[in-house]
Image (tube, rainbow, N blue to C red):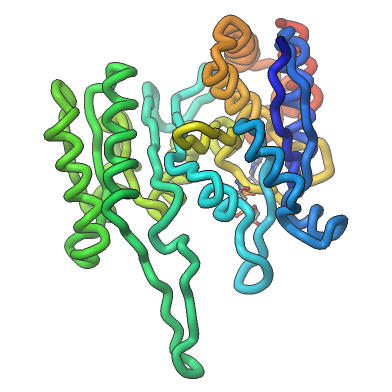
Length: 335
Ligand code: NAI
């Protein structure tokens, strides 16, 4: 039976990389009925809404989506579609595996980190106001249920995948209440379900320094929303950039898979985007829907191409001279 999957092409490079991922999944022989749905700045132009009702209704029904990036205006305009989707469908865990990639030379080898980011609150609650002209405030929300839920998710994830260590980055020395609660819940989850797993807590400034000095000391990273957002990109930089880091937004009965990168307006529409991050996100999605064999084949295909390192098959961000379609063609040829 075919899987029905909602597909959100999104903005900027979104349509290019989602098209690429679709082609690869099709070539791998996975039976999928795609339901293409609008969201983002392009949806606003066409439907007068960045997140049209039909998109929400479809995800509500099918509980599974593959999503391209969407543009969010800086300092003005509509609020983030990503934040809306994550809150609306209680996709409380962003999971971003960051690994050294075959054939991609970076400063470090053997990086094997999974960033687990709380996805529904913190400063991303978007509660901001101007108290008097020239004085604004932004509230950082931390609730015990959400902090407990993500901490338990991280330890469950670590346990199921036999990971050895969970590290929490925080700033509870300054934000004693909000980050203090996040840290307390992580400690509690470790006590309850972290048998055999080392627990480490670092103040985030030190954590950043340690990450860029020796990322191999880290395994699972557990972070609140804003820190998780920033650290995901930092970690991507350790292994070859945003073109090679996938992601999933996971809730109890719904999931949206998307790369860590944004809509990359600087290269959009030119066939230059690296589709690998979204292809890797699609592999995570295939594992989620138990299409394990196809997932393994796709992974083997792109790893082979990376290892071979023929510049014509690779995009510029990972040292190639090719474009999006060259990479996709090479992956499909291996399938
Ligand atoms: P970005 O991730 O779009 O781009 C940062 C840099 O990485 C750019 O130089 C870009 O060309 C490069 N890059 C990103 N993805 C790439 C890929 N697949 N292949 C090759 N190069 C790639 O971040 P930026 O510029 O800060 O944000 C642009 C827009 O994307 C903003 O409106 C932002 O709000 C949005 N955004 C959306 C996300 C999502 O929908 N999940 C996540 C992050 C940002």
